[in-house]
Amino acid sequence: FGPTIQGEGALIGQPTIFVRTGGCDYRCSWCDTLHAVDSQYRDEWKPMNAAEIFTEVEKLSGGNPLLVTFSGGNPAIQNLAPLIALGKAKGYKFALETQGSIAQDWFADLDVLTLSPKPPSSGMATDWGKLDACIAVAKSIAPSPLIPLPLAGGEGKEGALAPDRERGQWDKTSAISLKFVVFDEADYAYAKSAAARYPHLPVYLQPGNVVSDQPPLPTHPPQGGGQGWGEEIQPVMDRMRWLVAQVVADSWYEATVLPQLHVMLWGN
Ligand code: SF4
Image (cartoon, rainbow, N blue to C red; front, side, top):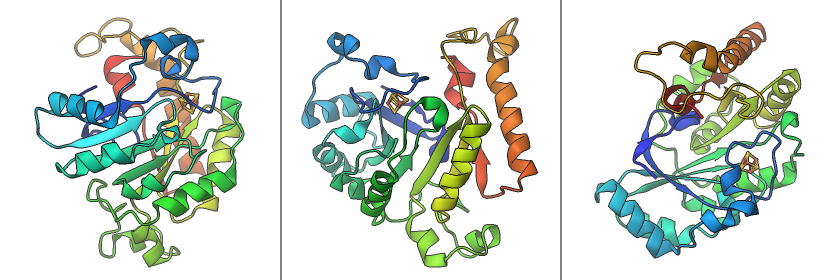
């Protein structure tokens, strides 16, 4: 679907078309895309091969190449190499969002890889060996012009932000980033220790957004806010303010804290 904008992480705000794949090897307690995960929705899924998907992408883009973002479910359970090859031949760029539980050789063909290991509140356990494997495969991705400085490793800029990082390492992996959803202290501690494990990777923190046990956000917020909108989005914004306070108190200056822009604009 799209074109729209990427709502979170390193590419926030950038125009993209999403390809949402069905199926996931996880079952996070707060999954907000169960319609792409739970087999009870299988009848709504549309089996498509690479050529069919690319035809749809071209239809949506009007033939103007742009960024294509794979989301899910977990797109890493698919073989997306043929689709990437078709798109790259026409000038499209490709980004992948995955929890990092499955490594595929075709990660090396991507332009941007976002790894989003799931924190304790998800109820899932991280297999660090698998996450390591994802990073190892994707390490050959060139620094991406899609990611703005200083994260893309521009001359001298990264040194100013992180003087203790090895320069070559930082440059090489700048197209890979870590994104953590944070609901509470335990999630925050998880994000900190995971980030410490991969000191060369940019880190994005995002306040958790519980769809089920808080008032639903309106599907279409009134123009300029309007009555009720502030109250509806309040729980996520409260968590975001708390998260900013944590990061500042810890002097965790390598982290970037971002909301889900699409939720602010369009609700859940
Ligand atoms: Fe849902 Fe993502 Fe968790 Fe899969 S990894 S269950 S898609 S939140």
